[in-house]
Amino acid sequence: MTSDTGTAVETERGLVYGPSGKRLDLYRPAGTPGPAPTVLLWHGAGPDERDVLAPLARTAAARGLLVLVPDWRPDAADGGRGHLLESLCFVRKEAGGLGGDGESFALAGWSAGAGATLGVALRPEVADGWRPSAVVGLAGRYDLPARTTGSAPLTDLAAGLDPAVPVHLVHGSRDVVLDARHSRDLAEALRTAGRPAALQEPATDHAGVIMTEFDPTTNRCVPTTAAHAVEAGRLVAGVLTEAAGGAVRAGRSS
Image (cartoon, rainbow, N blue to C red; front, side):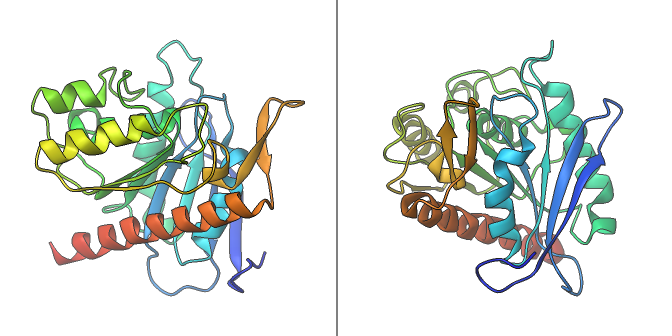
């Protein structure tokens, strides 16, 4: 498949990523030599909605990234923790063989997935002491328990825990599902703790920030060509590129 940037993007769908049997989709630029900067991208609170992130993942892959998007079930007994951490373990072990970098990569999430990403950085013990090299939170809320840790990121920050990696935030200024103040509150808390935090607020809504629109007939987000969503998605793809590119450079220079 060729993107609107003219860059061909390869996809592999339905790779099983762990003992649970859950699956992920892979997006990567075609014909790129060497390991591509890598992003693990988690969807939100809809069960098994990896397809919802396909437009954003393709757009990011066209910029030279390997993007892996797993299914997970927030309605599982553990709130999805097992699926999320399984997918993380898979990427750490297998990304190198899939054309990416499994040692140093960015962790990104949308909506409920956003808090889960920051949770890993704040509490790396859930990943055997590993931290992502950057975190990207898209339209998230951070005063609720993270699905990966069971602890609210804002509470952890107030208690003195340090994510120790760059945090990039994007939140639509027209979001009526999760108000942008949630990301503003996190950015303020990070800065108060002495950590840099980049926050961008494109003129779009909760679905638009991932290049989709909400379809009430299916109760799902679906791809859209609306200008506000396309523009926001391109902005997010740029943020992912910055985060993942920085991750790879940092990993190779250490």
